[in-house]
Length: 332
Image 1 (cartoon, helix red, strand yellow):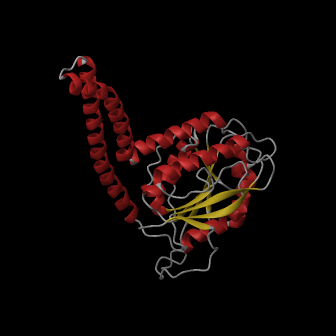
Image 2 (tube, one colour; image 1 turned 90 degrees about the vertical axis):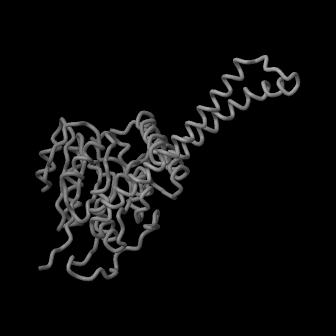
Image 3 (tube, helix red, strand yellow; image 1 turned 180 degrees about the vertical axis):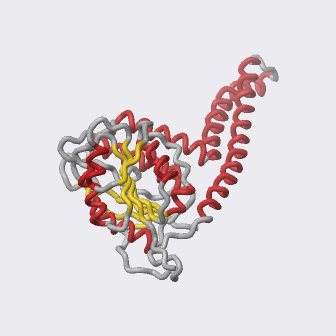
């Protein structure tokens, strides 16, 4: 029996009455075989009614925050390819076929719609600068090249979705997705997609400074959890430097007079150096635990088949889908 690959589209929404109908219609036109889910996130306008009228299946997540919606959707929706796109019509939903097709052609575990601004005012200056700074931080910490870490237009394979912990609560969920792919070295591609101004009547839920600080905190927390040896080595190095600065005068006095007149300073320097050694040791222990957790996550990922365009009983031959703009991570 021929079983065609399944495709699902997830549209997180909070008060997107002005745009969600067009997004759903564009998705259904681009991917008529896909099931479109609109996840309403405590809207107070007619988002639910408009989404249903456009032909979407509407589900609700009462806990506010895009990360909460993604966690719920990834747990509920089961598909070979799962596309997420914001409900504000800033992304070009008509390109959904290109992103999904590339996922199967690769095969890739993630295809990101890298934003190409087409309208003045679509991307506020503060957001653009923040995206570059945060993306640069991720490149520095995780050693890979990402051009649009905060894009909300992505397609995932089933094995990405089922191995992704989805711990974020709000807009930092895209950061978590990016780092998950980088850390497991999951094959990822990017496709340039237009990014335009919001529909009239829509209001951005992203707050430049508040959400930028939240995302930076997530990056630092993920660095602590995913690169513990690096973080603990830096902390231990700073402590060791302080200990050396305090200890040099004590050692100099001892070499000159044969006595230790600054006993409290000597004790403090020795204590700080001991703490530095313990911090370094804890870092290496956490690194070993992290590798064990990474292996378990990788095994969960490998328990699901790679995404394929052809029916599942057929060979996984290469197709003729769109060419990726670039590959941002290679599988091992």
